Length: 129
Image 1: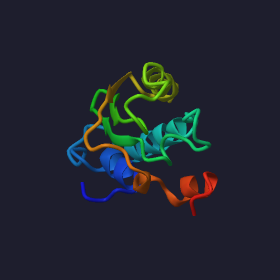
Image 2 (image 1 turned 90 degrees about the vertical axis):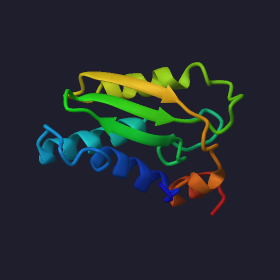
Image 3 (image 1 turned 90 degrees about the horizontal axis):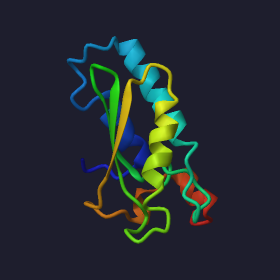
């Protein structure tokens, strides 16, 4: 995807990429997508006062027909002190969404995260706007 907006990228991934032939009814898929995003917004990077979704750390959300969720995410830096813990936080948050059967979090570093992936909300939170 060429869009670097956290909101647009993750929402398109959850609601559109490969889901046009989904066995999940469209209204349920929309609810799951909204609930997953809300759950992701409860996970914060401990070094930056913004949630990981608004920071643009979520690269892909894929909801499969069996309601298993696969998430590709990154960190602000590969040496992030919570690198070993953050995927577990994300998994726990998304697993709490009603109707989700399983959650798999995959840590990726390509493309590398840059501050331009941050939403306007995150930029305001860190005083960069």
